[in-house]
Amino acid sequence: MESKSLQTARRMRALEPSATLAMAARASAMAASGIDVIDLSVGEPDFPTPPHICQAGDEAIRTGKTRYTPAAGIPALRKAVADDYSRRSGLSVTPAQVVVSNGAKHSLHNVFTAVLDEGDEVIVPTPYWVSYAELIKLAGAVPVLVETRIDDNFKLSPEALRAAITPRTRMLLLCSPSNPTGVVYSAAELGALADVAIEHDLAVVSDEIYDQLVYDGRESVSFPTLRPGLADRTVVVAGVSKTYSMTGWRIGWTIAPEPLSKAIGNLQSQETSNPCSISQHAAVAALTGPQDCVAEMLKAFERRRDLVAGRLSALPGIRLPEIGGAFYAFFDIREPLSRMKADGIATSMQWCEALLERHHVALVAGSAFGAEGHVRMSFAASEEKLAAGVDRIATFLGVG
Ligand code: PMP
Ligand code: GLU
Image (tube, rainbow, N blue to C red; front, side, top):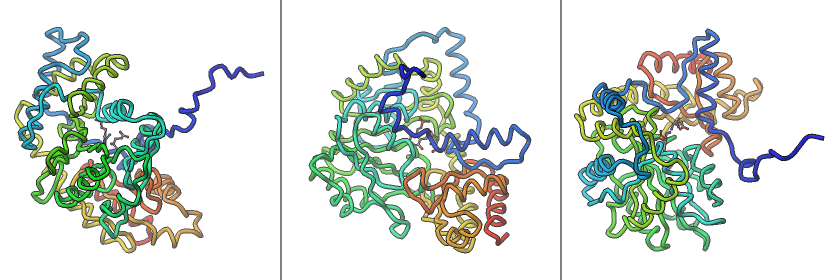
């Protein structure tokens, strides 16, 4: 009889693998077998990490900064994060409020583990980034998915938020600019949600990892700035992955009230000791060094946004919201899907599978983001690849 000794824990049985990473892995396996795949699945800037940041990493290795660091991060980085955030937001944040982690994904895991009790409910507007629901469940809590619609530009309204609140609601999770929709909430829209959070004494996690990737001259607004006292109930999550094209360095952080920050630091001291020492030194250079690289990448992303939004919305039956930030086009394929049933394609997953198999373009199915009938394209790729990708989609739709 087979031993059950290494059967996985109940909490693991419910855990889905990251759909974004799974699709990217599939696309690269196809590419490795010689197929000309256009991979627009994963959300990862395609630029090299700017040279002055790499040099700081190099210097850290050469000067022996290769040992354990304080669990919550080196003082220079906690200060750099606090200073940068204080300067940009206008709030006054101290280094003690910052905990540096192995990427913003890890920071989110830390917050959920440190704040949520078994059975607590977290309101997550859909479409949501793939890892939110799984990380909330891992912490023993319950993601309460609240649908937003393309007709409302995928924005959560205060009424919908209010209607989802129960006596078990503990937290609201927001992501603006949004992964997967690219939608950016205005200060007034976020302020109206803040009022409901205050009225119902909710904690708020504001995922601001795309805060510097906003288009058309928009100003990015940090959630805790919107109402007095909001910072006491909000954790801001951000990092260097997207802004500085540093996904592989694995540096993210939380900005939280000091007692919670201390708890997160304690948790991390048991979990991972500290984020990579070398990456932390590189992240100091990213935050304190010249920022022209950020402006240049932003310009490139804005050109790509224009190309993708223009070309996709010209395809018959395809609808997409206004992309104000981040680097995703999240489009509605319900109309073409309704015509493809005879071809065995009825779901966003089947649509993505067929697009990959037949035309070698990798996107991510909307179902992974809690929004069936849609798909996500990452436009963190060259204009040439994006144009070719849209051409192939047009052919798939029978209009190319
Ligand atoms: N939040 C959002 C909305 C994201 O898109 C990502 C991208 N992976 C993350 C958090 C995590 O970023 P990282 O772990 O690379 O810092
Ligand atoms: N945030 C990126 C995405 O959504 C990276 C993948 C991931 O971390 O899951 O594609």
